Image (cartoon, rainbow, N blue to C red):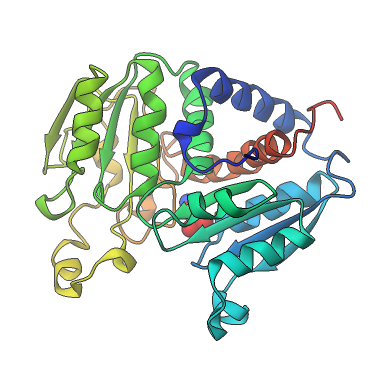
Length: 304
Ligand code: CP
């Protein structure tokens, strides 16, 4: 058993808070030598901008080195090599593996066969725990607390792995949720059951309008074309919601708009200048949170 991070449920509330504390330290001083001599492999079987580049920047700013691929077509997976063999080989070269894969469960499988820690950088529609930790860090920075917040989640709640991980993580902090999605992309039943079990109040709607005027966090998501089996269904729902600047007028002063990015057209560009827009800072926070995650999985103390 190694120190992998596959699902946000791998971490207790205390471990989550400890990562957020550590991220604050890294934000104050992101350039260190604590990963000197370490090699981290980034294996991206699916496209990425933020996750891969922020993990790689995190390693480099801590004095480590990065190997890996950003396109499976350039790896021997394209010749038929199994994930089992890829992980065995890469673990001969690297001290930790950061992996994104289209198959749900691929990261768990990799963590079970790998002698070095595996960090899940997204597995299909399942989990994206490093995104969740940076979402929590962004919520904490903007709200001053994680407790008793009203969180409105909008868009692709069916395939949105960042939504699924965030619901589980926020369950430690007595949230109230509002889920806004078209019928085709409603939150899966397992997450409704999860909320009921944890006594977390939630409501559902398919109207955006002013449904978030009492929210502290508006968590927008992209309709993910790559997850649809039926592209006609994607065409029907792809433009279902677009947040416009004027829609933020009657919202709470502390409201912040988050989005894991990339966006397509679910947030109008004119929102970017609104002081309630926080999605670019949110992505920047990913650097510090990923420095904290890598330090934890590699058992490296913050002060090294
Ligand atoms: N939020 C996120 O996972 O972005 P990328 O797909 O660009 O990594």
